[in-house]
Image 1: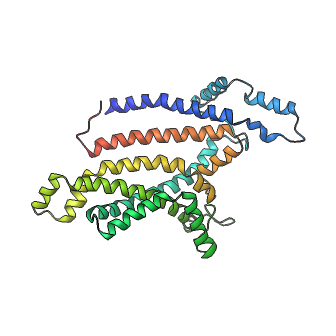
Image 2: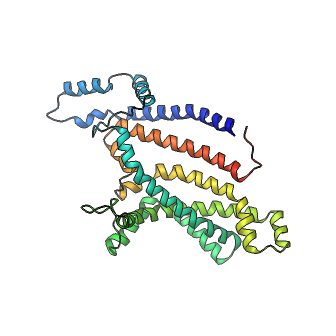
Image 3: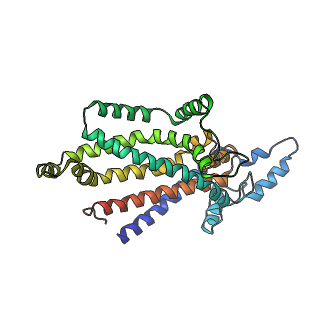
Length: 315
């Protein structure tokens, strides 16, 4: 296992470097970040001086190597817009994103498993058809559309829940207030992810339920509850782990639109602000963090495979 983990980490390093090169290349061709300071009172000489100060007058590969050298020394640079350290900006925004992502992931998995088990054990019933149809509908509706619908219903029409921010402005942050602001974005994310989760887990359960050892367990008189929730579910854990492993990067990097719509002060809102302002250091910092999260998630997923299935070996 140690050799396998070490091999995965060493293999992840060139992948991580390749991702940063591609991101940096795309952003370099997207435009000059100093365009935002252009104005009638800003001379071309002042802009050129800033280009020299930030090293933007150098070739792409020189800029990238300078940035990579700073990263290796723990320096993520400073924001072109706010002039704050990028590490401080990310640290202040990662908490809300983890809260939103973690809540949505936990609720989605907690609801998906029993719903998928019921659908698999009642195949071709009215309940099964209803669940499958709802799963396809939930997966097909874009998240931004669902967000607009719930805002219209619960904020505009009913006035039950707030639709922006993490807490009420001018008031002390309290758990109840944060919970009320968290509800709508979590509902949207759960609706977007639960459909695919239910389909994956249902398919895994249907395959497991046809295995001979489960038929033998039923023949021996083991109760239906134990057969389904102990023997079948235990052997369906690998597809469930796969679903969770796919959902973590998706939620971590895919909450950009949701955070923008709900003005949630997380990494998604930070990323959108940085993109609109051509704030290269912030964009690169968030991209690097997202890539690391994806690689770590894949590594943990592989390790969990061995934990739930001893027959899996690593080379």
